[in-house]
Length: 74
Image 1 (cartoon, rainbow, N blue to C red):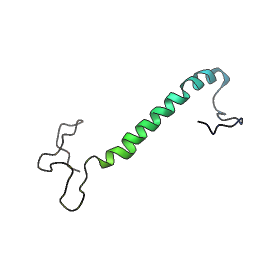
Image 2: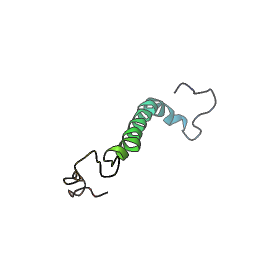
Image 3: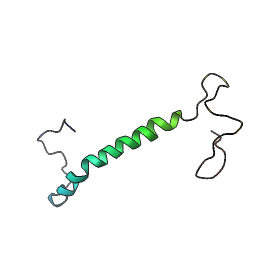
Image 4: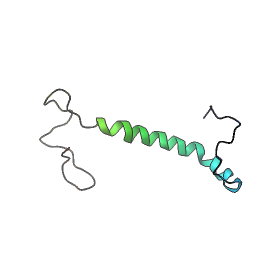
């Protein structure tokens, strides 16, 4: 995070928590970005219908939902 300034960045973090915060700040931001890219951008493009009735998967045998074990409908 190059754009950091000398101003107080985290007014709600106490002095006793600052060392722990500094230690985990960048790894937490990294995982935030990774999850955003995968869940925010990636999941909406996994199963698409391009032009009408042209799919990037076999609609006769749709993938299985890992949460309930049923074929994905929408």
